[in-house]
Amino acid sequence: MPPSLTLLLHTPPPPFFLTRCSATPTTTATATASCQSLTILRKTMDRLAGNARLMIVSDLDHTMVDHHDPDNLSLLRFNALWESNYRGDSLLVFSTGRSPTLYKELRKEKPMITPDITILSVGTEITYGNSMVPDDGWVEFLNQKWDRNIVAEETSKFTELKLQAETEQRPHKVSFYVQKDKAQEITKALSKRFEERGLDVKIIYSGGMDLDILPQGAGKGQALAYLHKIFKAKSKLPKNTLVCGDSGNDAELFTIPDVHGVMVSNAQEELLQWHAANAKNNPKVIHATERCAAGIIQAIGHFNLGPSTSPRDVTDLSDSKMETFDPAYEVVKFYLFYERWRRAEVENSELYLANLKAVCSPTGNFVHPSGIEKPLHDCVSSLRTCYGDKQGKQFRVWVDQVLPVQIGSDAWFVKFKKWEQSGEERQSCLTTAVLSSKDVSVAEGLTWMHVHQTWLEGAGPNSNTNWLF
Ligand code: GLC
Ligand code: MG
Image (tube, rainbow, N blue to C red; front, side, top):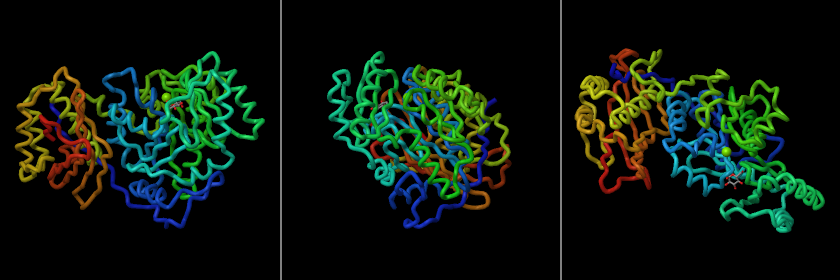
């Protein structure tokens, strides 16, 4: 059956968190977040009606991102699940060992959505929002009892330590490569040296090759504990937190009180050994049978943290048993259909186009990023000529930060970023759409009234673009 493109929705939440900048988060472990970072954090929170339903704190390399899957399928499945079911009322936190430089590189390489909070450089840097505003309170806290010069001086005496790239050396992180068979012995010797010099540091071995030296109060777990304290002080502790990881620097995430945890199936030996020695009997931590992001989805289902079926796993998208209108799901579903249509993964049926037209207002218009305006119905008709034009090719479409706002009793304004990747080429548009539930049932789905797109900075058109929607 062709999809009818019916949609559901969550009620858009009213703002909360209306504290003034002078009101700083009270945390025992730390100084306070700066005014600017608090403002961004508050903005992030503004879209949550209450406490986040779910906070996912996930490592990136070999956890959210599978470097052995050139099609990025599990990541794309996670993205569709998050944007359709969680974006509006939950929090996404990426927690990576990468520096800001390497994190930004990864974002260019892989189809990643945007997190609300980014924890970088093994929990030594916390940033908020799209503009990644750093939390200065965290920086100040880490400055206590830390002396980078002593770390540099002591480590230079070990010839087995090979310094990592300059980008990965950060104010509160000094990183090396060490052979697996030498790691334990070197860690011990280093700890002794630092102790003698009166420096309280944390040494973490990850991925069977990376050795990071950080202040004792830093690390992915400590950064999460800090965030929890900020949220708690505002009575906004997420209802559930799920931590996800694969390697040594993720271990301490699993020690934070009350969190659920998933070690993805492809977890490194060092994490599994740590788990066997320290968390074996904790029923809130599982070792997934699925790799990377598929393991995260598996954990959401296992712990009953919310919906765990990605729209990408639904073949017949008309089959969804919606109970309410849901603009976010509508958007995800539309672009999934669009991808499948161009990849010829759905039947080349006129019925699909008729159904699409049925959910587009006959008077509705589409403003193409080039500035050309066309009736929505004409855009649907133009799909006819591009059926299967991406068949057998690397072609993927995903949406990021799908945020609907209800603007009337039967109307929603939805803003999102739409990405399209074709081979090596990537393009993205900031998209706004108005959807209406006037004179339609939930089963029929929302009506698209208007769509407007603008090229995202740096992700604009290439010479022969065939961007359609
Ligand atoms: C990332 C960082 C590296 C670090 C490693 C383990 O790969 O780029 O500096 O050592 O994570 O934490
Ligand atoms: Mg990892």
